[in-house]
Each structure stands twice: as C-alpha cells, then as structure tokens.
Length: 479
Image (cartoon, rainbow, N blue to C red; front, side):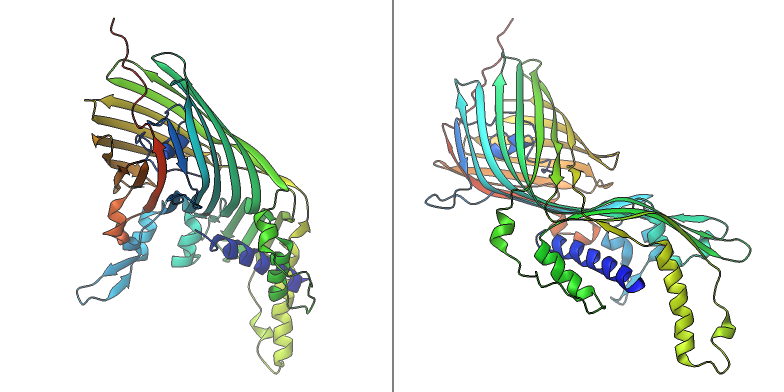
C-alpha cells in the first residue's frame, strides 16, 4: 500500500511542476490608464480605446506581433532576505530575516497571457465591439509561514504548541479564452461595458483543501500530525500515465503514453465561462472615475480528471525503541521495523483516487480608479486593484502620470504598492508609425536593476494595427 501511496504523491508532484514549468489572469496596472493601447480595455471594458479600428496578433500577412504578458511575483520574502553579501564578497544565509518578512500565508505566482487574435471597432462613434482569443496560464504556489519556519529551525519552537500548515497548495490553470466585448457611451458622462468569455480548459492542478497541522507534546515531545487533503487534477491521460509509470516502483505500467500535442491544443471538452463588466463616469471635464470586475467565472473540468482525497487522518509518533536497532538483530529486521512505522503512517494518510468532474474558479479582480485630466496631453491616474483568491483580498494600489507628447507617442510613469512591497516603479510607452503601434509596459522597471530586492517582475509588450487614432469622446457640455 505504501508504495502505491508514494507513487501517487510523486506522480502528483511531477504533474504539478512539469506543467507549471512548461510556460511561465491578471493584467498589469501600468497599462490600465493607457487608453491609446487597445489592450488596456481588458482591465475595464468601460474604458474604450482611443481608436476607431484596431487589429492585433495576426502574424500572417500583417506586421503584427502577439501581445505577450509575463509576470512572476512573491509576496513573502525576496532574495535579499535570504542571502546577505559579506565584506569578503561571500554570501551568507540569513534565516532570521526570511522569518521576519513572512506572513501567515504567502504566495509565489507566475502568469503568462498570449493573444492569438484581437480585433475591435467603433459603431456610431460611441459604441465599441471587440473580439479576442487569448492563451492564458497561471500557477500560484501558496506556502504557510509555519512550513518555512519548521524547515529553518526544526520543531523545537512548537513544543507545547502546534505548527499550522493549512493553506499550503498549488493552483495551476492553462486555458484558452474567446472573449466578445461590447461598450456603450450612454451619454456624455456614463459609459458601460462588458465582456463575455468562453473558456476552453487545457490542464489544471488544484489543491482545493490542505488542512494540515503538526503538534509537539510538551512533556514527551511526541509528534502528532493531522491532515485533510483534496486535490483535483486535469490533463492529458498520456502525459499523466507517462509520469505515473516513471514514479511507480511496482513494475506496473500503462501503455497509453503517446502525448498528442495537436489533440491537447484543440481540446474543447472542458468548457467554462466568465464575465468582465465595468462603468466609467465623467464628473466634469477634469475628473473621471471608473470601476470594473474581471474574470468572474468557472471552468468545468471533466476530461482527463483525477481526484485525490484524504477525508482526515491523524497519527502520533512516539519515537523508536532503540533496542529494535541494537543487539544481534540483522539489518532486515531493522528495515522491517521502519517499514511498519511507514506503513502505519501511510494507512492514516492514504489518498483515495477518483475521476469526478469538478468546477474550478478563476481568480477575479476588482478595479477602482480615478483620473485627473490636467491638460489635453497630461493625465494623473489612481488605480486600486483587489484580487480575490482563497476567500482573501490581495490588494494593489498605483498612482501614474501619463504624457501624450502627440497622437503618435506617449509615456506613463507609475508607482505601485503590490505583493506587500512599495518598491515598484513602473514605465509604459507607445509609439505609432503610420497604422502600426508598438507598446511596452511594466509595473516594476527596478526589477531589472535590483532583482534581489524586488518581489514583482512583469512585462507586457506587443504591436497593433490601429486606424483613425483620436479621442472620440467629446468634452462635457458646459452648463
């Protein structure tokens, strides 16, 4: 039994990290106020781009490159907390500084979005219709503080107490998004917008529940572990079987290990849906406010599903009798003693495998923003974002200044608080040559200069074809 248990655990781990490394939902904040770039529309469909027609991500026959967004972040510690540079140019591990910067729960996140197609155009000047096809991937690894502390300092710090590992988990999603958006300027003050997204799930690894604790007895130092775990996975059976064959030590193999990339890419069995909606309100010619909600939806995972459940196990380790390892007992007897202990633990924490379909949520975000139009060329923006994950709000706040030197060139400078760090200075720019627009934005340009002090790195770049580039919203009528 124990061999099969270990096999399942190893297979799950390989599946998780194999998928999450194959490529590396959320959009960057700096792009939000840059309405000259059509992709800014994705964070609030009520903020209509400043062009009549835009085309993106058509690499055939058109000089357009895909819009790519990549992000990696850690809201716990950074590299400067782990390793300290000494006077002799050597590096020293500093566990105390790591522990000081950890919160009860911490996240490491990696995302990548790649547009395959985007298209948008105005209808009667005040309406906007858009269509996009995007490949999206997200991997989020959640690690509790106690798990790191017990690795750094051992279990002596928990004598008479309990280490809480609850919240440990991984959520990996790879899916394709087909989105249809419509926005309408109701009058000279109010604009409403929404996007409906049809989702095609490719693969998923989701630790839905991980209630785990380790208690240390204050008198005899007995260790009592308890765990309730629920894991949902979805992916190609051939890839899963190949990983399982490598991990299985029982000698049993599955012959269905021929992975078909074409079948994976065209998979349409795991369908889902999501909504974005937003509103924009012009107070006067100078001030404007807006709000939006994005990625509110689910994917129904049903093809290639594997579930692993342990409804609750508990085991107390009271130590080993040293007499079992002394005297004239042979090595086989000593190994048998350890094996019995391992089997006893395995019986308490055995994972039951199933193949039940499940609904996996996306990670929705809420945006609140305000804009001050200082001149026709200069704008100050304040954006607050709350990302909702595991029933908790992960906040970020940005202030940005945008300067459009002309209709063809503009820059944005931003300063943000995100991932529990204030060290985020961002930059964005767009340049238009004829109908061809190039753009680039990042929330933390300092990550390329001082990566050891940075918790966030993201970059968004691409090119579009845009036509009739100008602002279509007239100024408010003067009273």
